[in-house]
Length: 244
Image 1 (cartoon, one colour):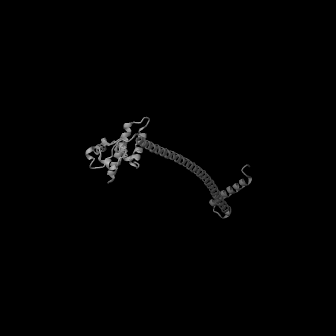
Image 2 (cartoon, one colour):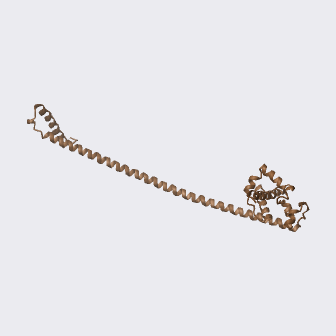
């Protein structure tokens, strides 16, 4: 049997259980509850779980599937493939031999006794209740896991925020330290340049004062004499101080 044949057979069986559940229309049951109950009926009668719910959700409203299902349900195809009777008929033939049930018309099946029918319904209800309980437990576990995940995510975000704050403070302190170093360097450079300028000025003043005016030409003598007088006046001014 190919994969598609398996899907057709399983989904066709489940659709009959689902149709029977919709026809019975139990009060107080939503569509999801009906799907769960039909799944429980399937598992109880077919002796295995229905694992192709996603396929049924896709195929149930497709026109091609509805046409194919109608052909599969027609009597002329009963000899070419193994047909599965509807749930009410399956309940009627539950205690019969499988070979006889596949060749005998559903209308001639002997109905189950009252006790047998009640027992089958009780088993189906028990399976449905157990399935709902398991689904509820799984939902609770998922919610708890989600809460734990949210808590861990919040703790991780808080840790990241704390680390980023520390980084910002460290970067601020580093910038402040670099600015202080740069100010100190500029001050040292300024002092060095000032010292160099004063040194050059002193050397130039000493050179000018060392010139012998008697050996200079008249014009040179007048020039250097003015410079020497300015230098002497500057030295006297420095000695007296800025306040005097």
